[in-house]
Amino acid sequence: MEHGEILARLEATIAERRLGDPSASYVAKLNAKGLAKIAQKVGEEGTETVIAALAGDRKELVGEAADLIFHLMVLLSAKDVPFAEVLAELARREGTSGIAEKASRSN
Image (cartoon, rainbow, N blue to C red):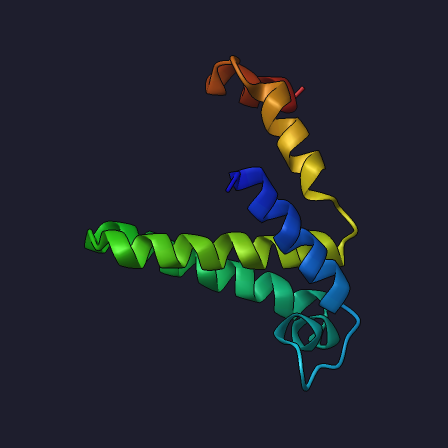
């Protein structure tokens, strides 16, 4: 199974459940709580990912990274930003030095 296919299916599922019944869908529940709650979850999952990485537990790191990506996709959906835009930005940056790319954003 293609990785992009998994992300596309996940994005479609998130979009489908976004306005669903909060008692039946975690995505709907997060959206019902608002953008600040979704952003908080992204922050929490980011922190948990860092902790897992520093602890050296590969399985935990993979799980937390998956949680982080999921919650990031929920946040992007809440802001009506297709994941394809993020991928396009990564493609735009490909082959550019990180230092040069960051400097170009500060101009």
